[in-house]
Length: 227
Length: 47
Image 1 (cartoon, each protein chain N blue to C red):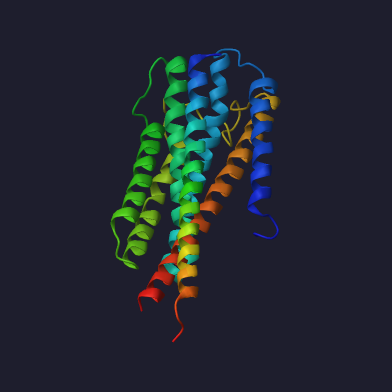
Image 2 (tube, each protein chain N blue to C red; image 1 turned 45 degrees about the vertical axis):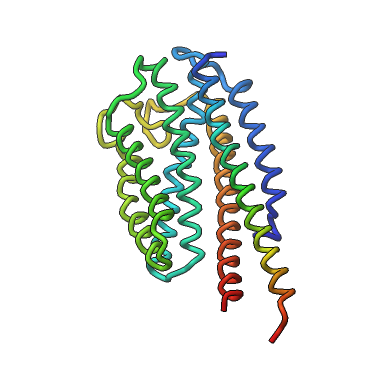
């Protein structure tokens, strides 16, 4: 991976992709008829939400990998996905109310989608706090993996909330059936922006995993030096 | 530009750039510490 796609190339691709996404959002996508300019928040809100949910799926996969095989790499992946996924979840909870206020007239409501997203955010915090405060090596990975696996239930509920219940939050845009479509130019903008966010996510996870590897090497060297 | 739109994009930008910046600083500090330690081990007399 490092040889095929070095971090510098990854960063360059990310910069081009993000620039293209911003161009499409502000200059290509049409102005929405009822909400006007503020609807352009949708592109980063949707992309952040999809990425935050996907990140928790990666936390789940990494946690399962650690519990099953005791794989350090799987644990590093889960930890990195949780840290970066938390940022995307923060982005969802910031852009949501900033769009809700002009669109609905309220900043927040405790409907199924918003509540389950808020719980997902709390789960990310719980996972990261656990990783920071429990210092027993071996034990912290197991505890965090259990949280990673159990917490995935909320990620599923979060994804399905607008399909299972009537909510203040709009019905799904992606896979939502008839009447949930967008203008074709909006679709292009949505997918390019989401792609850019996935590229950003993968870059940050990769850097975070490289850091975890360096930290492990440092701990081993210290142990070697002390022996 | 609409205030809500401006705030949404600015805050998201700050979140990601801020994190990337702290990540690169943490990583650089760790690498430096690792190099220092490797140099110390290299300098230590071999038994």
